[in-house]
Length: 437
Image 1 (cartoon, rainbow, N blue to C red):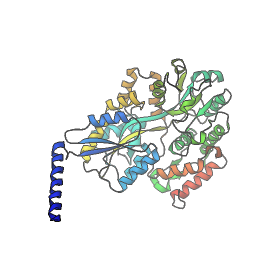
Image 2: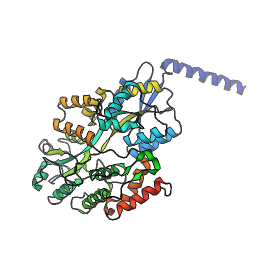
Image 3: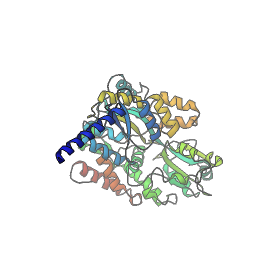
Image 4: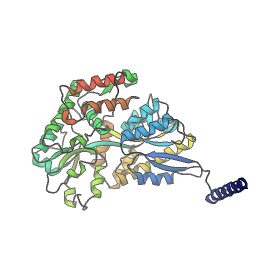
């Protein structure tokens, strides 16, 4: 009798479930999971809806805020051949590693030609953005937005220092100007990826490379223990030892220095930071801790500072590329969705609503024509991407970044006479498998 009742109960549950599915309708419609970083999420959610079709729905899945944690989560899924990882937002330095591991679908056809052609200046993509998705002459992702850093500053602070901002300025000049006039210099120097971004820009600005011959994999040439590495270390040391260093230098990130630009009664700062800064401050006008209309007019911008007087600076190049997982059960649909969510209009919307600048010239032209940004700022962003310095394109980039962080942090301990050599020796040992991170 009890077994009969259980059987009846199971049938009732099955019938209820079937009725529920029938009532919902479309329950068998495939879902493409799109893993996104936390920037621009409202725009992503809208495009997930707009780019869904009668064949599939796109659902946004949020990744952690830090680039390292984003890589870890995606790498674990892809290493396990997770078929539910259909689309993903990729920091440019992930592309080489993921492509080399066989975790990304190749981009093919006309779109691939447009991307690869742009690297040579023959396509619509910014060459600096297009280059981030190329591994072994093949496109493995689609550029969505192209990020870069510029020097943000208060005009009144530069004027007080007598610093001519109409031409290139150096890190030494910026640090001295802030130190002598009650200002500060904001950077990203916590023990995380953005600190490596700063170090890489300093080394490239001095004519060097953190790592070269990256196609050799673990046998790549480490270039930190060089004159360029020592000049980069000298800048970090100078800021750390100066009156311009912000109190939280060793834990500073993209957000911590924002409040130092318009302090109550303070001189303000020089700050290297990404493109989102302008819209951030514009949105805070009149709010507690934000600028007033008058002080917002005191905000200015210039090209990323030079490491060496007379040498052209190498602004950081970042952004987000869209990759399609190699194990997706619906690779064709996922690639079609990737094209939709990287459309020209999507790029324009990200720029106007979230301060995340485009990867194509056509979208840049629309942003410039919108009047939402000063035109000279838009052109500074575009020039900085194309003339900037990317981080090493290596399948072992995670090791490279981790080893540099381990020996250059904290910035208070950086010494031009020892840090470049110690970090080079350690990085070589890590790449050769003789040391662990």
